[in-house]
Image (tube, rainbow, N blue to C red; front, side, top):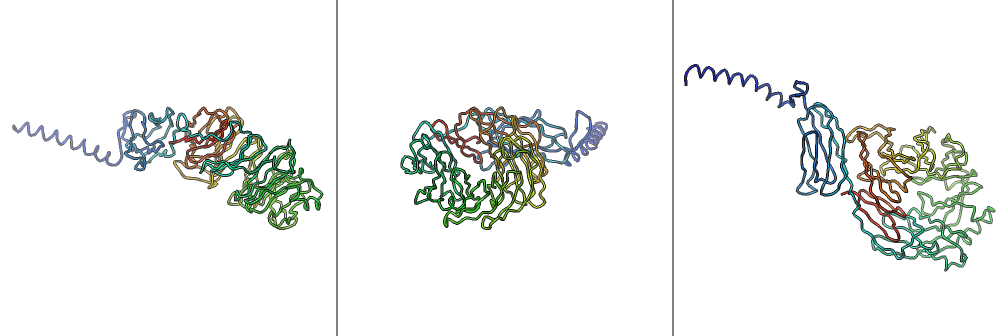
Length: 469
């Protein structure tokens, strides 16, 4: 090789070294060249995890097919070396559903943006239907996740057990001497342990235990004689924490009736609208909108806690949910939804017109439906894919009609709303757009929803439907 050639090669290699070395160093430190702004920038990443795991993911111009060898081995998909800018992300599962998950995710330098709660529902629920003994059902009352009470003629009440697919007769009014031919079942209430059933008819009250059926007219005879009350004027509730205690709400106030001993305490003289349904069960709302705590074992034991600033509280159907950390959720159907502090008596109004409410088992989130929209409210500060502040609330889906019931699913990061003809599924993510999907179906009576499935009664059939993979 000539000397001039060697000299030229040297300077070429030197130039490549001087130019290439900084590029290699920059790229090793997480930099990339931004051709839009003609500058070196530190990159970020996006991490996605979805149900189902077999998906097609699009991030900008990047398309990647994800097909893990086994579902149990799937840990998510990482997209690295992304220029800091918002990216429109689309996740499809063509082998499972026609629905898409779409979101605009920001990428920051040296930061991994996460979306790990992606759950794309089936286009059509994967249903498993069991025919009950009739094609017409006019009454359903859930008992627990695996059983419910039902009636077709409102005279005979059955309890269906999903574990063995059998219905057992619980109450037959035609066999009760205390019931006339025209008597019909109005409501059914299970005790906390689900072993005792209180059935209200147009004419009487019946209590079914494991061994017998008790006629309320004779069972409460002494109580009615001593108080001057009538059976039809009493509203019954099982105590939320004590299996043997019935709460009797009357015009004379509240009574705690011990089902085993038939003894009772008159814990308040204030007319009660509703009592709390969870935890201790020792709170009630009176007709003036005042919330009290009480001791069911003591006479006149009420203690004022807070007041709800609402006119005519008696015109609403109320529910009270006791939470940890001295909090109480007061929900009026078609009315206000509030969170109260039972220590200082403060009250925070969440909305003026709630139609239904669901609270997660760990009491961190609350979903509520209004006339047109579905929202989520954070009861606690949470760190997940993004940070959520306590008290933060945002819209997650539109509603075109009043839902039967709403539930949490997908490890409490999705909300399911059941309607007569549709199911609405919505993700919980404050980043836009809000992903929600509508599935056509036919529901007569909703029962319950779990992490990925729901069950309901549909024209005489028990339907169990998987909504998520």
